Length: 499
Image (tube, rainbow, N blue to C red; front, side, top):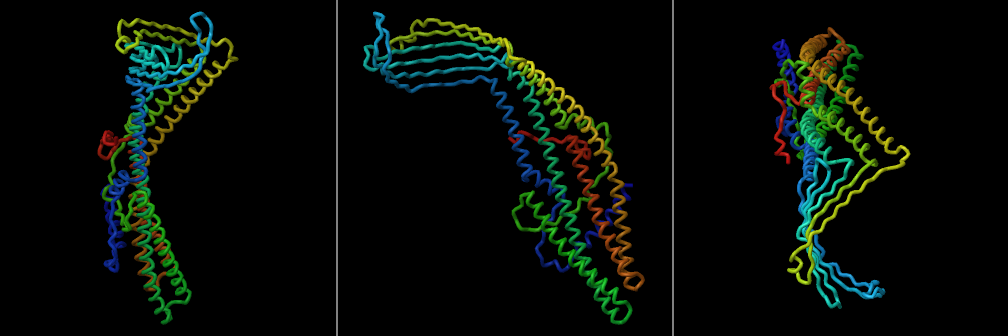
């Protein structure tokens, strides 16, 4: 059956070639010829959608890197160089009395700290080392040093929401989802480009058909004038033929304008800046029919499409919000522990001699006594949102699999649709040629000729539309399954090259 289809397709290509052949165009600018594959390659490389898809992926990549960096050690240096103050303060004298004295000093400090967030608990451990110097103005002791060579500490919120735990679960899924979304965006670009390609291709042939029809009707009208002068046809037939010529000329102008508009839209999408016109080559020889098992297509769609990861992510996010509502604004505790060494002296060396240890331990709790059901209400809202998300995801999963099923069934019908379109064009074109010859010998009226011409033109455009449906269906299946059944390979890309 495929050979039968290709026979008609080859015949159709011959008709299209004749429509393109015009000796008067020999001296005109040669248009740039492009195939569907070439147009799609250009679009996937430099179209606005391609650039947006790349930047969306890069955004997700750096979001993941940022999330991972939150759990990596951080080394910081802080310094005050210097902090000078002058004031009059109340100072307690050795005898216990108070007096107001002027104070002027400069405080200089430097601290080096190393900290790390603990993803499992949500706490933070840190190491510090700092040095301070105070310069007193108009004082018997002009300079003092204070050092803390080593401080070790840990702080932890207990029974509270831990954002690092959930980020560790959700962020890798979001990144994998972003990878799949990028692959689907590339296939969506192919879909958008295919639509623009065939819109222009249709106008291209409509323009050629209109030009050919105008030339044919002009010839027929000139012949009809001679036959009318000889009294072989009535004036009504001559007037109808003149009307057909005028309509053909008007159609030629309209199709030319539509062609220019659609060529501009395609070139704009491809970001082509030159003024060279385009001539599209119909993707007929690239057509291939192959079996797509429905079960395999649904399995691949569930495994490869971003939807499956989106469903998983949304469920985890709803669980996270329930956990947040359960943990926040309820019983909580805070633990802070620190141990360090410190010493002071008039010289910097003295500040590091025989350092003394220092310890700090604090434990605080927060217990809401009366909140009028605020915390409980927030928990119930979060739980209801989670159930809504689960219900929506279940329905979306069913709809998604149904969509895959319908696309596969549509693809199986393409073979028959192309066969019908090719056969219809053959019959309509042959009918028009016969009608034109019969009109020339006066066997049929101009109305019958117009009908045959309309059928012939419509059949050619219908075949182009059948081609368009085939390629759109083909790329929709690729997008849904992230798989090329034509070559039996998964669609992949080197994501490292995008960074």
